[in-house]
Structure formats: structure tokens, C-alpha cells
Length: 304
Image (cartoon, rainbow, N blue to C red):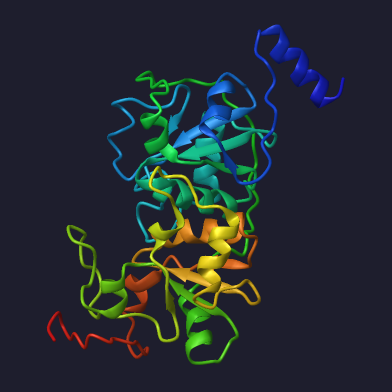
């Protein structure tokens, strides 16, 4: 029996209607609600507020704590392929599973999770359009139970996908003349050097400003008021207005690489551009010795 027929037989036997796949990198809240019981879909929540999951989450969703599950807790790095492999196996994810990620704050860390998954070879990852914000606004069901799934077997590739930029790659643009666009997705005050970090967020860099040649596109400009992404045409026009049209490779960055992964998702997954995310971001670049910066505000050690 072919895999498709086997899946159909299993879902019918369980009384579950097989999912109709949604093309593209996004799924709608209506589609996800209709397919909550599909065994070939696994939902993960990746929220900035790591405690919100316990207060209620999409039924069947597995919680991923961004600061422990998706990073190396000893050195500054993303989770290893072995570490992610263990998480996916415990969640019952196989090579044929469609992974749906969602989170709070307009899918900020959910997009970062998609970037981490993609690096490790899990490419069939979709975001819930509108994320937790839209799901709650529409009064869709939430659950407090922690789901349990039969363990699966999945082997991740040891060779990471080329979706990550390093400091050397950025310097090759700034000092070596590489024909790559740099997109700083922080707020205008961070970009100009007026502030080091958003209010209430820890300052991690010695210098303020931005990488020379980078254009500014605050990441929140890619979403609507209800948390859904703007249309591809709207996004394409907005980025074209600042000279980003996909004609050459792009590197996105922010403070620690998480907000910039949201823009990475927009540019690479929605618009199909060639994009890498620099997760060292301003925390690394702004602290590196001997590298050039631009600081229109003129702040030095927090003073003008």
C-alpha cells in the first residue's frame, strides 16, 4: 500500500478527515482549526512569553521554549541537529509531517523557530497567519493539557542549510564590496543610534548605530493590525521602496537575530528572495573590535 493510501486508511479509520494541504508558507486559522486532529500535522507554539502556553494553547500544540529548546544553553548558538532531533522525535514528527508554528507578538519567535527548523533540514514548516493574536481574537479553542505523542524516528541532516550569515560574511559586504543588501529590521531609534535597545530590553552592545550600508525596515511593518502578514504584493512594494527587490542576495539582522528572522521569513518564504539571517546581529557586530559602524545620532557610550 502506498504511503498516501495508508494515511487515508488510517485517518478514515480514526474518523478524521484527511487534511487538504494549503500551499505556501502560511496556513489560516480556519484551516488549522479544521485539521487539528490530522495525525500528519504537528503544531508547535514558540512565544516570546514562555509562560503563556500553560495558560492556554491551541489543542495538541507542543511548547517550544525559545531560550532553552531552540538554543545551545552553554554557548551562543542555535540548537544542534541532535538536540532538535530529540525534540522532534518526542513530538512524533516524521519526515512526512507538516509542521505548523505559531506564537505571540505577531509570530516573532515562531518565525525564528521556522528559521532554525529550516537550517536543520525541516523545510515543510508553515506559520499560522495571525499567530496567537488572531486565534484568540476569533475565540478559537484553547487547551491547557500537555499533549503526548508516540515517539517517532527522524534523522536530521548534519549539514546545515545555508541560511545563516556570519560576521565574516557581513564584513565581506561592508569592507570587501560583496554585492549583498543589508536590511536592519530594528526600530528607527535603534538604527540611528539614539537608543541601544528597545525600552525594557537589556542593552548588549557597547556602541549604538547600524552596519554601514544597511537600509532600515522595522520588522512590524510586514504585518497587519490583526497580526496577519500583508499580501505578497504589498510586501514586495514596501521593500522595493527601500531598494530591496530580490535582484541580489540579502542579509537581515537585528539585535540578537530573532526579529530579523521574521523579516527573513517574509523575504525568503513569502517573496522567494535569496536571504540569510545574521543572528550574531548588532550584539556581535556592535561589540566587535575594529569594525566600522554608522551612528547618525552620534552617541558614544550612551551619550551624545
